[in-house]
Image 1 (cartoon, rainbow, N blue to C red):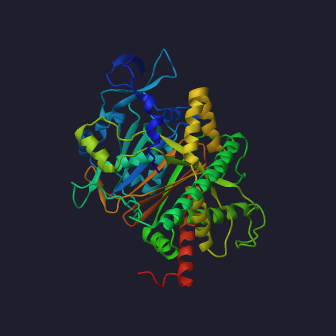
Image 2 (image 1 turned 90 degrees about the vertical axis):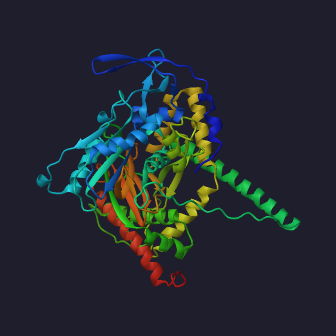
Image 3 (image 1 turned 120 degrees about the vertical axis):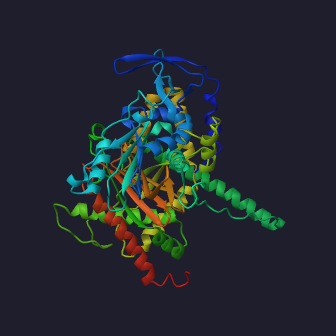
Length: 519
């Protein structure tokens, strides 16, 4: 979601003077002076707190083995044209709260890591890659250089000949920005001059003219919508405030353990399902892909939790009336919504190609919204999607995300970054899940000339024990889960439940004859 209202919130970043800063690298000290120092946005500064040290990762599975040199040559003309990826995060020694991006020279050899592997010694290449990313999540990026790196793993897995892991500190930008930038560095394999095609939401045509009576009804409709938005926003903001203060989600087997701050490592696994299956459900039920994704997520989580609650006790069953789930489970996702005018991949590609350093809608300018998940077993699988649609439609009629962004800005202004960070961490730790759904390219793309069979974004460092990402690519939907293994020791089983839930929903549509009129 984007809004031009974010522009006003960042206007105070202009008019900055150059600074001279000292930093240490190893045992050496060097001076660094730049003409274009830029302060971190207030939201970006949140990500440098030890409790919210979030890193975004995207792994790309390629169809061929990867040679490092062509990658380096391509990145020089794409990613490195973006100033965030050639800047250090520097803290002024005279004012430790003054954090700035400072341009510096970059050595690509320090950012591109080649993983040497003897494949003959590997029992499971897929498990090797999975364990590599898990071990990577135990570490933070080195702040003595720009906050990103790229890992090339030339290992043949079930679905690829090699894997590239792209890691970025979340202070460089929000998820929408980072994925857009990554896609702006790719090209279609059918035509290496064309950028990927990203589906956009079609706008309904606005009537050119209407009668006075119709105009009155339209005016009344807008007034009623305003009242609904105002009431919903008031309720949502109230719920958000009491969540920060004391209202926690129900303690379930997938809740973050008490010592989650000391264990930031995350097991990141994925499952590829058919995007056509999701579209089939979408068209048959007249909903959106996001409704279907949320519906099968609620169904899968309900099945998974029902099984976990049966461990160590009597299994009561898995039906709507007889199951192991406690009544009234409160389980919510703390969603991040992009609230600034965001540049498309075409704008980002042009910016990198031309070396432009103007404003392109970059950075962390997002608000939060609490999205409730309905945890219950349903005999009719279609109820999961219907309930998800009702939840999403309700959240669309609220300015909760914008309100929470303004609240965060005011907290930072009047109480400082520490208080704002504490509030943000409370919002995430008192909820259970992080959930995102991103739209990807409609055709095959290549990264630095290497065709990609799929790509999957995720993150680690967030207080939640479970993060779920949906990422579409051509005719695939990639479900990625990032889990704390202390809470979710069997993430592949959770992915099985998601996939099984989609099949149940799809089969229910066929059995009920809802797909008769679909072409």
